[in-house]
Length: 168
Image (cartoon, rainbow, N blue to C red; front, side, top):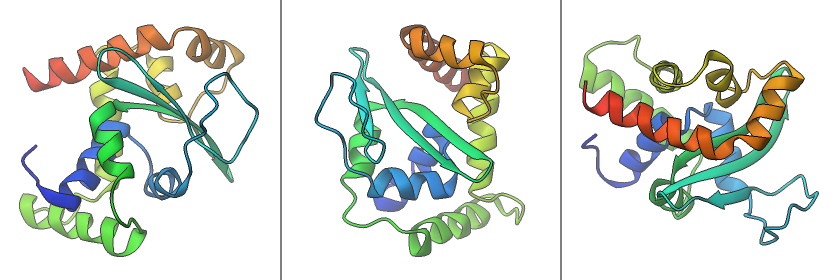
């Protein structure tokens, strides 16, 4: 993806994280918890940097019926997103909407499309319930348990899915 600058960071983070717009605002506004031992704070992000350049961001944010447990993103992209001097729905997400519409020439391509694209890329390699966990649709205890104990496997599949997408 060749979009540069802050707008490029926003669009790339939206695509690679699969987060909803409000979840991105929440992630940017939230502090990162310095305690890596598994604390119980609920208002901070917990970041697990894996050795392969991928990070797991534990978010645990719920708004109405929408849930966001965690996301998996390239570490450098997460750091670039958190380093943005400012991030708000307006102007950042609205600018991304306009940019995507202008570049594609399709008024139906909105920022939400990035979330759908992310889900479809993940479905190429992950089991459906794994992709659903990333999309915040974990409904069963089994799916939540799997995510808690199989994060290494999920990061490997995440990386494989994006590599497969890039080579198709």
